[in-house]
Image (cartoon, rainbow, N blue to C red; front, side, top):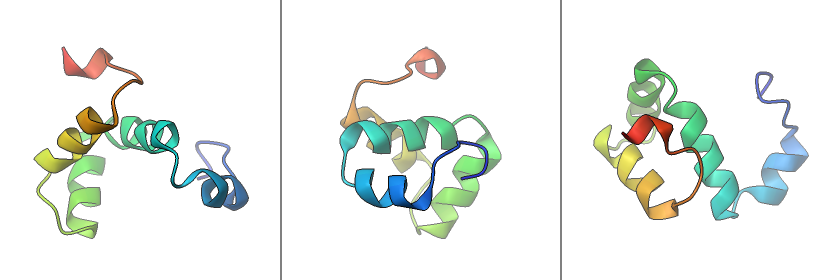
Length: 65
């Protein structure tokens, strides 16, 4: 959270918003190791992170090409 400038109150208020969730996944997807760590922490396959991002739509699409 320190890197994003977000506060815990921001997170709570926006946690259910698809745009916010997409931005979180965009951030996680900046580094392969973050994707692997996140996937392990929530017990999913790393590929499911990208699947979730696709489902949310919009956002930064540069890393998809």
